[in-house]
Length: 133
Image (cartoon, rainbow, N blue to C red; front, side, top):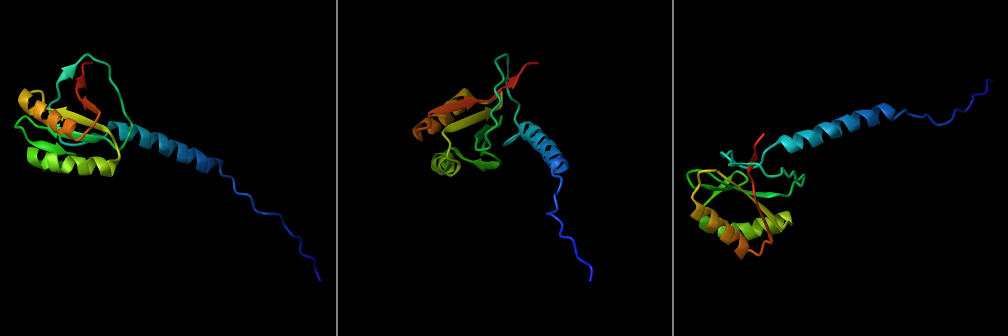
């Protein structure tokens, strides 16, 4: 009878797996910054500082030139915004709302939207603009 030698545990080299995962993570981080949220509008240009926020829980209210209001890609009237914004805020668990308005919207409409946001008790409202390069 032959004696069978017992071997130790099989070791798997995980270094290539870690390398691939790091590359995928970097690609994901870069593309998540590039992707836009909401409806495409013609943003005003500014020379201010560019701030990037990597949070995925951002609530973006888009306002088109025609005065149409969107949360993400869902079109709402001003009355529907009053009703649905508190629900959306509770679902996303955030206290920041971004307004992405076309450069040609009426100032009065922007003030009405900001009034609706203020009525919900949000303490942070940011206006999105395009940086001049």
